[in-house]
Image (cartoon, rainbow, N blue to C red; front, side):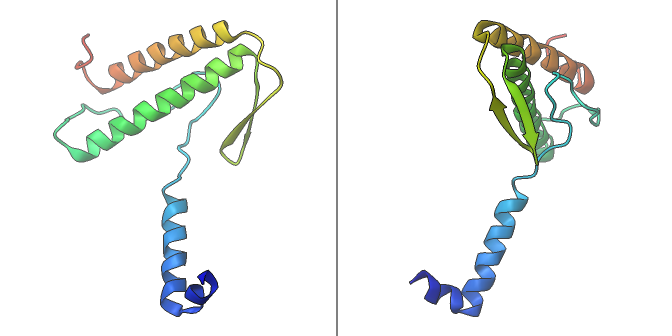
Length: 124
């Protein structure tokens, strides 16, 4: 049944278009690292009524979480390998508590940096 559908030109074009859209939405953001370091980003005052600012904020939160997890895993003893943007963990977990604490410290550090770079809306 699927092969019949893909033989039709319109279905084939739609399938290619859907696959292209799916892959392009999985962009890997530059600056992901294992060292709990925020990369250079445009500094601006957040305006929550602006949709683009809210999208940027949500993206920044996701990057913060990813950086903290990567850093915590590294401190915990995982050997992390980044291959084409996909991170895999190798070796044994050595110190789960140290990793958890490192992840929390990293999150706090990154959020502090983010607030300093954006505005004084973070309670400073």
